[in-house]
Length: 193
Image: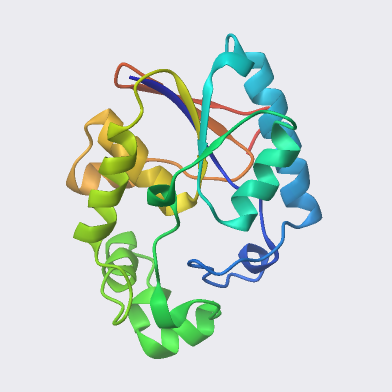
């Protein structure tokens, strides 16, 4: 399997450290630049770019990113690539989330993820994981995927065969592209992080 994964550009709520979940927030100036960088990165690194499949999340911040990065390129929306549903904490700041569950303020990523996936009224990890697997099962040829941070971690970890704590070794980031082919990942970026 070969694919390129890119997270949407920075949004106003990313800059404010608010959980977006399935709500939307427009890209910032930095987010628009990140989208342009991702497009340039893909043009440099994807052979036959405009013959490659492009599959994206249906959320506005992803569509905005794709339309800046790859203007005019046809894409398919896949609802299974939508951001994790964080239910009632959508739109809340970090301080507001910590007031609900102190694990959100932890330096330990396991604590944060445990809080993230145990939100009452939110999407459980098994449900989230199953829909990401469904989305990836539909990919049959080299494909570019634009989606969300937590979606990217799940997609990449599954493709790389990472389990448990080894998943935490994956880097994230906006404005970069990850190329995964035959179980090997390469981080592509125009500017150092």
